[in-house]
Image 1 (cartoon, rainbow, N blue to C red):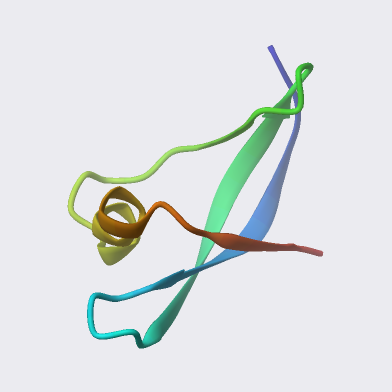
Image 2 (image 1 turned 60 degrees about the horizontal axis):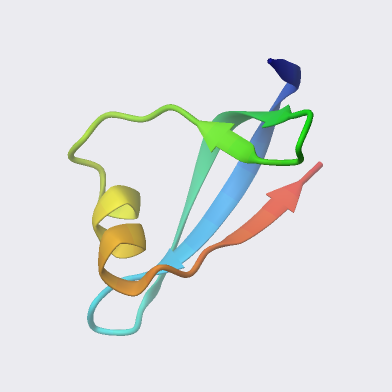
Length: 59
């Protein structure tokens, strides 16, 4: 069960190495797993699938 919902900026990199950032809503589960919801087609999904790295900025 999520314990909080907040806004975060996620940073990923595109195939050409250029950085990309997106504001997303997320929640943190009791086991500290971070969960976010998105459409299937955004670049962040492609970037995460292809490279598996992300930086998160929580304010």
